[in-house]
Image (cartoon, rainbow over all chains, first blue to last red):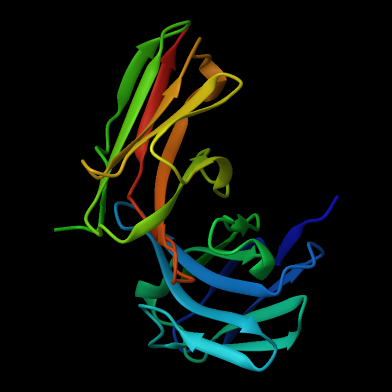
Length: 115
Length: 111
């Protein structure tokens, strides 16, 4: 089955550490997104990419960076993790050919805890 | 005012009843509307999409859209305990990549 995968699924780290979250997809979609979810705040967009050479900031990009290594791979980095980056992180994909009516499809998520 | 608003709930219904979930949005340029189901600790799963005014049915789910009143709703017929989850409404403008999510409504289906 075409899928979106994320690694790691859970991570506990300390303040100041560099962390990378990885996302891979076999859906053949060209668009990829990183969100974080916090209780009561819903899903907030961190970064998005429409293709390998196109990277854009979302609404909460400060403290994060991304890399689109290939059409199927999109990584999120926290250069120096801080406790308020503790959250559930989701990668999502969508298909340009189905835009604007196509929805986004989410990976299983990474639960990140920064101590 | 939030761009997409949902009552946080919980909405509690007995098994077999119809659950009605509502969502309002602020941008009149919005064109595409989606409902996601999210179980606790899991990822959002796309269950319905709707683009035109009126109703769209898929199995036990019916999405309803009223652009004039700027609301979209999700009806779940014959609710089952396995439907207990948080339901997220998401809205997109035609010209935009961006999905705007509501904070979700928590649904509890009592056996």
